[in-house]
Length: 185
Length: 380
Image (tube, rainbow over all chains, first blue to last red; front, side, top):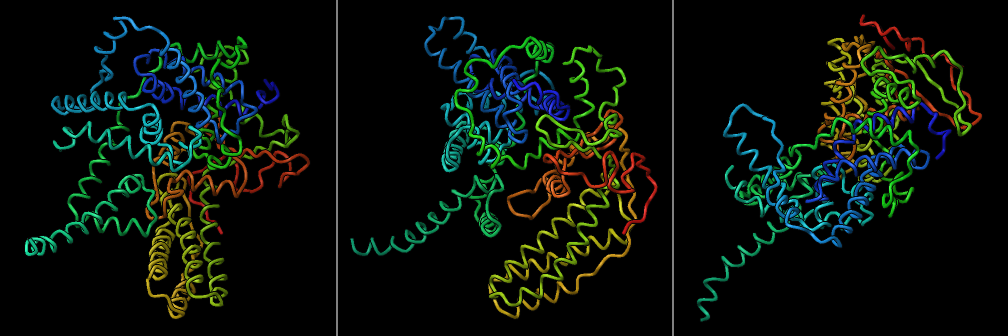
């Protein structure tokens, strides 16, 4: 760790701001990537921010956001890899079945709209969870986190064209899964 | 059999052709929704979806999917998140295992994220938030709700400071009026530059001349639109200046349309140059600061607006207001920091050995005092 860099108030100020700005989004990104192990999402977000602090002198400030997402993705994949080798028990499966990904919190005064919105969110979350990993991460970075194709390509270390193709396929699958909601409106 | 084939052939051909066209447009839907289509294609695409219900439906569906995705509820952090992170930092805990399995090449990071609008926005509004963190990290244990010490403003009176890398850190006091004045001046200077450059472009081949005229007039239009977009948020102009900016935008749109015409000719180039020559030059402007720049809350809201708002019709890149402002500030040099008292500073880190203009600790401009009065001031 380069302690000299950490004395720079401008960098520390920016770091602190980045913590406030990205923590929730990183947790959300990790939760969706981790799926049934979303409980680890907060740890992933924290680990990524800690890693950034330890590498403040190496990562240019303009690259902090993609760097954090890259690290969060690495940590998620690491955890998923470990999960694959771990036998699952009934409790895990039951938790998955009963999981309600939509937290309470009204966004509208009209109950029927609220219900409809909740249903849409629930079904969309489910459809995203069911996407293959490679599609899921591209879709989340582009459409959820609002990154450009170029930024997503950098975070994932894949060519721009691949981002475009995977995003197209992810969207096709989601459109199909959400067709019953789309045909209503 | 022959007659059957004949009966079916015409409608089949028409249908196939129409399907083929629609397939091509459907392939563009994603890019259209993401705003990534080149302007030329975008116009064609929009014209098509107006006339084709099926393609319009695809576009609408994708747009709705994207909206739903963005509106998914966010994950809330546990109450102890920040404290735990800070404790882990202070304990000297190393980088978590598995975090850096595939680090991003530095070159790529810089290439793709050089603009870093969000980071700049973070810097702009950070100091007062972050001063808490700094003191806490140094173990001073202050409470965030207590009045914040003006750490950053304390640096203003100090000479250029040497940073870890041997470069000079320069902190210059700034107020929103300076930003307003600089932006306005950059627009008016842009008119002069365009008018000076346009006649020289006559010697280019017509296509090249029109492209160049279009590029330059769009740059100027962007600058004018930025000033107008910032107006009423951070500052406001007198009605005459506001009218001038509106007219400038209109005239530049006309020049842009002229440059877009399909028939390319020397006559078109001359017409565009003539219109540029006739662009009206502004008189002195009065600028009033609308926002209370001493309030961090106001400034925070302001920069959030900047980040959210977009300037229409300027191609796929840099439509975010913040990016425009950042580019402008980049040219001027340095980053902005807002201090605990809501004052703005330009922080500039220069290479080793270079001297800051205006001398150490002294604002380079007489207007750049910390006293951001809301009274109108004459500029130019």
